[in-house]
Amino acid sequence: MAIETAAEARAWGNYVGGEWVGASGGETFDVINPATEEVLGSVPKMSREDTQRAIATARETFDSGVWSQLAPDERSRIMLGVVEKFTEHEDELAALETAQAGMTIRATSTVVIGYCINHWDYFARAANRQLQEPLEPVAFPTHSYNFVLREPIGVCAGIIPWNFPLVMAVWKLAPALAMGNTMVLKPASNTPLTALRLAELLDETELPKGVVNVITGGGASVGEELASHPDVDKISFTGSTVVGRRIMQLASSTIKKCTLELGGKSPNIVYEDADIPAAVDGALWATFFHQGQVCESGTRLILPDSIHDEFIERLVERAKTITLGDPMDYDTDMGPLISSEQLETVSNYVRIGQEEGAKLVLGGKRASVDGRGYYFEPTIFTEVDNAMTIAQEEIFGPVLSVIKVSDDDEAIAVANDTIYGLASAVWTEDYDRALETAKRLRAGTVWVNDHHLINCIAPFGGYKQSGLGRELGSYGLDEFTEVKHVHVDLTQKAEGKMFGVLLSTPPPEP
Ligand code: NAD
Image (cartoon, rainbow, N blue to C red; front, side, top):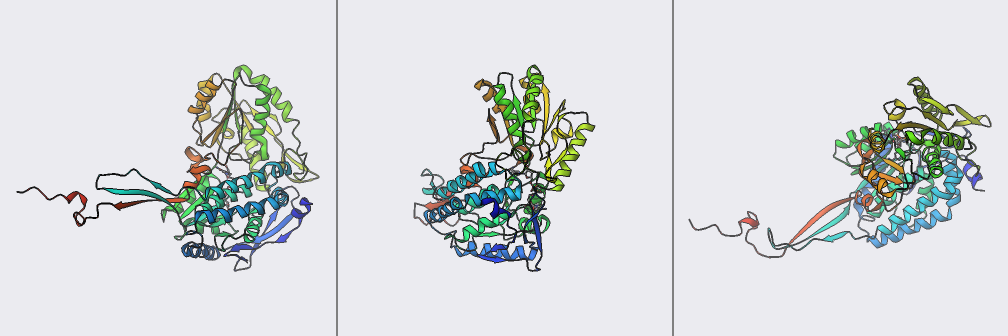
């Protein structure tokens, strides 16, 4: 049943100020199902002027105080109403996400939508957190009472990628709203439908109109307008490092607060004392989950000499059992890539890998299911040097590069030899060794004997060129607040007001 809902093509509007609107010029663009190459629906192609209207709505709503000044427990209560909507529509959202993003229905229905609910719920409850922190009473420079307020920043823009469309929408909207901000959200053009469906569900709750606005259109038009407009106070971006750099430049014109969640080339170190069967499956899961289109995919497998050959043999045998197929089929392990452009990018990297001397031991070719879809085989390269292009650049596809090392020091040096630092993993049964390695890895997340597991209470974000700031947990909430120090004079004296408290003592007689 859910699958039929997702297959229904329709013309969607954009959500601005609680109204469903189109682009002022009437332009639209199609959203394509990457498994069938069929049109799933069409959405408005908003212009810069349309974007300005959405920003003005978010500004007016913020300044009205209808949400920003609402008591935190009321905000929390209203946001918890969204959890109910999510839960009622879980199956339908899973099917729509699979249809637009090509993520398997097994992933969306058993993990991804549940994840969205769990994370929204966490932020809804966190809206109630302590927003006023008293400081120790002080006598210097004068007797005073001091406290710190955490306040909403104002109008926030959320710009998100296509790989986890609904999770990304939740990661932007939920913490921003919990802290009292308003938002204009721009989903990726390949995958705007679940964000728009979420807006429909939000519209059925008590959330005041204009708090959430969802608009669709190009990065160079809508995205750049959001990143540069003076009425946008904060930009929360997830996407490639190239676009993140551009957003940082644009945001600098008005010194906007920025959170950037960018690309990665995560190392996955397996030590010889690891549980090898678990590490083999873990390495496949780390790389091929969602066809490798995950920012923190473990795309560089780092293996000691001593286990390399045996590990590769097992890895390739297990990888051959991965089923490529219709993502709507519950038994499918890997669905299609997002687009024909992505297919082209991945194919090019495979060609470059071969030209630079890496050994292709599995896959490497485009595939199709029933003669259609943007599929690519699970692909493994061995004999990769970490300086090669396929080890340094983010491919964002199902391509694993295996790098051989001689000891822990070399493993860690190779792991850190990248411009990225989003995530990393280490497999060993020796927890001292794991901890020592975790401390030396330059990455925002380290998994020990695991991969991909991101928790709503734990900060997520990148070292180096993988980003700026953190999402999730109290760290992520803080990113959506301004910090205000309030000083209350407890002396109630006039002396010293005119030229400062330090002059309150009369000067010595000459
Ligand atoms: P992308 O950078 O091409 O696009 C991301 C978003 O930015 C889209 O909505 C796009 O329309 C918009 N955009 C494009 N050009 C813009 C511009 N000039 N100004 C403003 N906005 C612009 O990324 P993608 O291809 O959609 O997604 C894949 C990338 O996202 C990968 O690099 C991946 O690592 C990264 N990613 C990072 C995380 C993380 O948490 N660090 C999570 C998911 C994806």
